[in-house]
Image 1 (cartoon, one colour):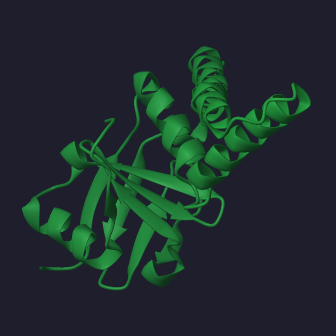
Image 2: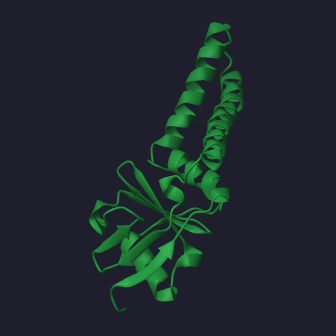
Length: 171
């Protein structure tokens, strides 16, 4: 592969839900277990305060409260994405991003901003979905649409270097 490989990617406003969904639910590996733990805690508190001692009731309440908590979080994600769509001016994550792939780093440049070199060893987590590579760097999220990659070699390079976890649901 000849370096640097240069391409431009951009999220459309109708993809804002995906941006907020992945940046909320999959930022850390601990979020989903934490959600299950909170659902169990709410179920335990509810059953215990009602005087219920049957373990099956605890499980039923756990399976009841965890989706309700998830729906609350999804509602918040939907609200944030709707707010971003209506926002005057263009949020940074909608602007075109010019990326240059190098063997050990990615050079990221936004319009009107200084270019930033992201060493690949600073990437904390990477997810591959049907449409995106989602790259987490501490508290920042970088989306790369697969359709914007210039060729199959760039896709294979990102897959080899970033070693993303594959998500088999969603977009």
